[in-house]
Length: 63
Image 1 (spheres, rainbow, N blue to C red):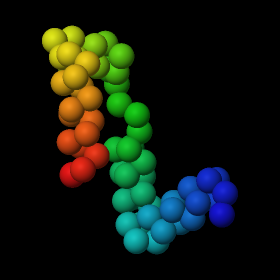
Image 2 (cartoon, rainbow, N blue to C red):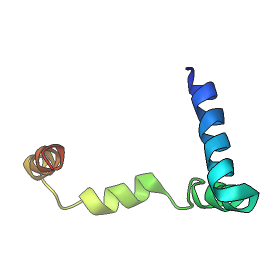
Image 3 (spheres, rainbow, N blue to C red):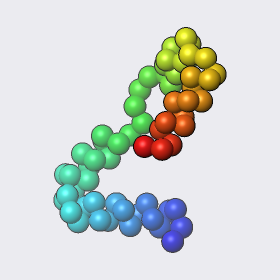
């Protein structure tokens, strides 16, 4: 199944299970949000060292 076929199938399942209104609500909620990811990431990571970031990645991979 291609990505496009998979996406269409998922939409069909959502519409069947949630109805047209539920599907519309889901699509509205799952759109990309506003904001500036790059700026926000810079703020979050500003005071972290490389080793702290690496440790965080390792912890998240094992959870």
